[in-house]
Amino acid sequence: MSWNDKNNVFFIGIGGIGMSALARHMVSLGKSVYGYDKTVSTLTSELEDLGVEIVFDWSCDIIPKSCLMAEDTLVIYTPAIPQEHPQLTYFLSQGFTVCKRSEILGFLSSDSYCIAIGGTHGKTTTTTLLAHLLKSNNSSFTAFLGGVSENYQTNYINSGDEYMLVEADEYDRSFLTLRADMACVTSMDADHLDIYHTESDLKASFVEFAGKIQNPKTLFHHIDLPLNGQTYGVAAPANYRSEITTIADGSYVFDLIHPKGRLNQLKAVLPGRHNLANTTAACAMAIQLGCSESAIREGLQTFLGIQRRFSYRLKSTDFTLIDDYAHHPSEITAIHQAVAEMYPNRGTAVVFQPHLFSRTRDFAKQFSAALSLFDHVFLLPIYPAREKPIPGVTSEWLLSLIDNDQKAVISKSDIASVLSRSKATVGLLLGAGDIGLEVDNIVSQLNFQNELG
Image (cartoon, rainbow, N blue to C red; front, side):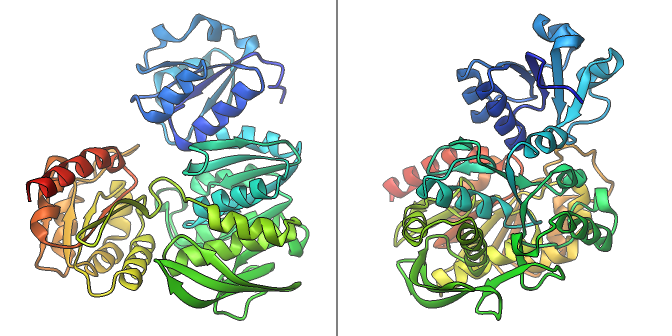
């Protein structure tokens, strides 16, 4: 398919984390970039600052005139939008070149050495840390991230074209379009059962993704996964393994043992054994790509993390507030492990916004078990995203399954007050919906309450 000769690019769902990164790339290529999204956000505002014209109504009447010429316009859409979206329907019916985001990434990945990182959990942290290690090594690369890097305040890094680093999304089997030379699989837990229907179906898709890597030395995967590549893990007999020596100032100090030797006394800033595993994966790929030991040490020491990935929003001896994107039971359990290890014997209160009716239904038992680990549990109404309600699947129903007397369904306006009344000294805001948009306001309210004493 010929797309690179088109001057105009229209994105349907341009405010998504993956879509906005690709939009930034199209701007860097000199394209005239336009798009639709349903809500104004920090990402859409940043794109507008780059000269991107965005509409927030899905009416076809307000599509920019420049994008009405099929021969000169490429349309890119995210599968997260409904198929009956009026603009998508219009472009398809009028013979425009219309592609999923993953298809364009597939074409781009054939032009450079592609490093693709997939997994139901951990891929954003691993991708972003590897990008920072490559940056510390002064490597030539372009990175498409699934989160906003705290170091660079963006989800897109353009530092050359020798490598293309991309987060490989398993939703809708998108990652199978990538032409990867190196790949990593962090996890294969059941998820997106609205797409895959069964856990075995999802795992088969990951096996297919991994099977596209011809050289086993450039396939990396957690040691627990049934794949045939370079293994990594924490305190495990893997090709690349991390051994914790101490925990200092809330961070792991560890030794990294690898096929070529050993790196002693490295520091992993992000808490939790799951994040140490992600750190090990990023270091393994950095070593394989030829990054120097000094670059790896410097990169680990200066890595600031990713927005909404165990992000500290308040941190004191009296109260700590952590914001995280966790939306799967395994992720919530991993967050609890990190908090329990870093803050032993401190009361915890979690505010969780379930994401998708289908995910809440499919993993209700696992969600209830994970959330029951916290001392206080507060649920927001289910964030629907692309879905319509499922009868009987509500936050009240999920709450009834949680084995904890200190629990309630609340509204967003209640978050600060219930955290304060709980007397917990560690608060957590979890979920992949719009709970992240509430954090600044919650922090302000909690600070104000603290000032009042």
